[in-house]
Image 1: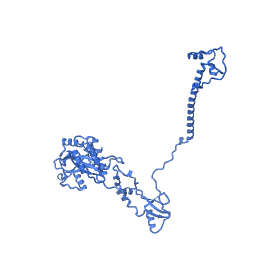
Image 2: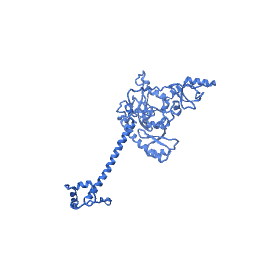
Image 3: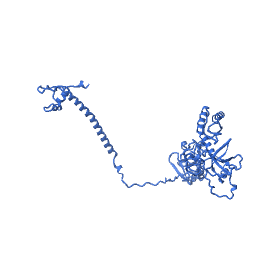
Image 4: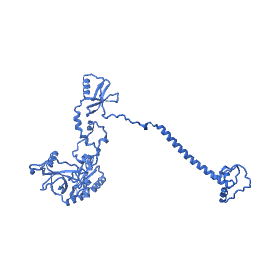
Length: 453
């Protein structure tokens, strides 16, 4: 999720958006800050802030650097700053008076001697060296994970960041407990030929480095603008009447969503108008137990022990019942209010439902009759074809031998005078036609059971 999504030029600026790294595509807006003081004129330019904010590794890390050069940098310029035994290359994200406000917010001093200095504007050679060393990060990450697995260390390598000049590499890892990685550092130093720095991060920081899309449909807050991670617990969900569902309340990092804290202050301010110590109320039907509070309608929902129905009460009614209970007086009922859903009632349509007037049983009967008729027709076709074939075989066998019984209608018609079909068939098969002068003996029809076998 870097500027590679919209394309970059040789100087590192996005080529598509042309807003000097401030577009909203991919990671160009990662940890981005709007300079709302950019167009305001100042009476004393000499007293301007000489500190600039520089982002590294596509916005995943930011640092303040002192501009000791005579150049005036703008947002989106690539600069070369001091590094560990070398130099590093980053992009300018903030300049001017807004930097002072950011430093004051983070508790940093402008005259801090440990602040890194800007060496020069990044040259083409600096950018070329940086691209070559950045190309080694993926291979180094894969190799570092394999080495950690061989040493059987309970840790997960999340990201590898190599300095622009290739003299130092920072390995970010996640671990639940403390890890003795002294042997691991020696192997890394000999394997990659650079200075190694190990830095432990949490699950939220890993999600910020990886990035992604949240359940709201937008980019993760931690990967775009959120830099301070505050603790989140289930109490925030209870104040907001949210169901304690771990799968719905957890983000992509596996922890509770940071956005649970966004509206928590509003809910706490609204809950100050609700009375305290009203978890139970005594009425004639029993003890009513409080189950939830609705800050939008100023209602408090109670339930009785022998009923599963929920009764909404106004704040004034709850306070009155509480006062009666303190005076050892038990009211007859809770006197709940009617809650309307706010949805408009559906009007009766004026058209006639003709489809509903057709009985489904008649359709089912017609369909059943149709299917039954098709099955009978298919069964007759299969059975009739078999009987016809057997009759044809019997007729062929009877043509070569004299009939011993009463001739069948079909055989008598074929053997009638003036028709040559029987003689033709018998002559083609090599037999002699029966003599017309000889008497035909009557007897039972021939039985060809042995021939069927």
